[in-house]
Length: 323
Image 1 (cartoon, helix red, strand yellow):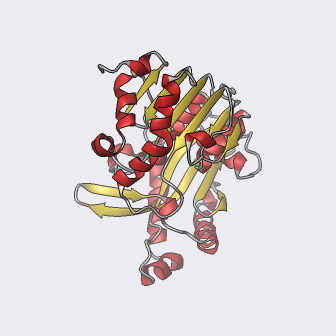
Image 2 (cartoon, helix red, strand yellow; image 1 turned 180 degrees about the horizontal axis):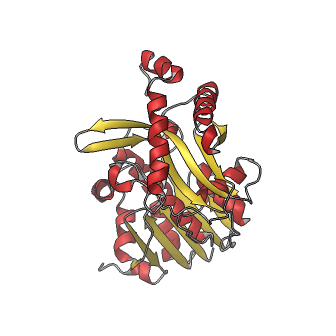
Image 3 (cartoon, rainbow, N blue to C red; image 1 turned 120 degrees about the vertical axis):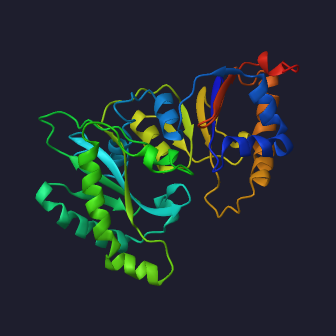
């Protein structure tokens, strides 16, 4: 293997990961210390887009890429936005967001909510589209005045972050926020939410706008992407790159010259034991990775703790024991 890019994305803050890794994943610490620091982006999806040669517009254009992967029509036309259903929770200091994947929104619940939102927005010529309950899309077909002046924060960067500093920015942001606020009033008394509340389930009381853009060609800078998240797999599909599920171990990674691996938490229920998760990754990934790099089995490694730091290593650099 000539080069490997490894993205580590765990649901914890960087300082928590590093503190746990000092005890549970010594090889990860060695790789981070011995590597050469390089510039990095703030989120997982943006890092994958960059690795696949997809250019940033106002946002990284995840919405049209994901819409195409979901099989929606006319993805090559218009300006697309993700408008995902979320739960907003009031905590000390502001509002926090619970992402769609944690809400277990059923297909009939999503259909009921979308139908009434679309009825409310009919006068504005807006319509939400969706084929999967947790992924909603808004397509702006009329671009005679150009794309909206709108910059948003990707959903994957909102874990543990307050809403207010991450709301949409730009000249058109106020109009979109006004429309979303109107819908949130509708959601407050919606039968779907009343039923969820009576069943002690989190209600859908917000919409998160992100990933805006038009569909543009990617550039296959990689031979293989190994990832489990829908967005990463959609980007790989768009860029024409072979994609496989995240392997359990480095040894199970299919052979390739230029590969990108996204290490996230498993799809199965995770008990939040960060040290145990890192210990497993140490055994399956970090220790074998350091050994293979030492032997020259990998000529170039880029290791990135998403949102925190990134380093590159060559076999020679991996022997810098004094660092």
